[in-house]
Length: 372
Ligand SMILES: [Zn+2]
Ligand SMILES: [Zn+2]
Image (cartoon, rainbow, N blue to C red; front, top):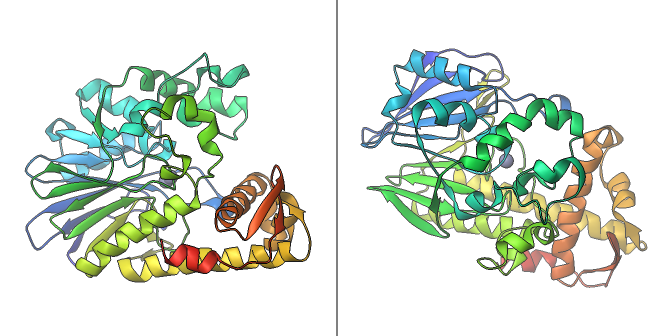
């Protein structure tokens, strides 16, 4: 990669890799990747947090809960004092990005900026929360698929911190954060996903665009669970959730790719992985992601065209058996449902009963995606 200086070499997956990007404008961005614990087929590699050394320095993301010490160590290696940051901006509400806030915000009094939906969904709403152990979950975690034992070990302390967190809200569309720094709301992978554009030379994209892996989309149906909280501001499920919403966000990025074809894209995973740096050419990667979803829709449509099928049957016919083990089964179901929901919208499928689909005979999906 151009303009890159390694300050501390990390491991083969990129853990601990402290590196500095020096941009033509003089802006410096320092990578602070913290450990993730997913393994096997679901290994994302570390979460790449970034220190943006602008006139008002700020941090993008804070890694997973429990990684605070490593984050602080890497900052020390790079000569950064956390007190120098004006704020930390959270790219989205997934725990591998905001978990570390618990350790960071208390000792430093750091301000937190995140999308409006983040501020709404990190709170507890006991009256409308699912019953049982999820009563104490913030609304953003109500759909979590992990068992109660996992929650007690990994999330309890983190959830408590979120309740009292003060968040400066960032709005929809594009918003100016400081001179030359713009946020973009790019929902779909998560309803509150943000990217940050710096001087039209760097785009920090969170999980919206990743090298080598396809970010998983939300399902439209996830809106129902939190509709009581979001409806006043966001009455349409499709403005925050679902695969079509995600693809619309990619189209938004396409405009940036057209205007700034050589922009440096810094994603939140796999920047360095398997002993290699993985640069992203924005237009090319966006094109690959769109084609991937068109292909997956075509393949699902072909399967359903042979006769009405439910999500599990479609998953068995679409994915390799090895991908359907353990949590893989739920991830696969998420993939199938998000694609099927979009093909219900395009008129190619009907949902005959919950998560059971029949083909209508039309094949509108490609045009439906490309013309968004
Ligand atoms: Zn994510
Ligand atoms: Zn992530």
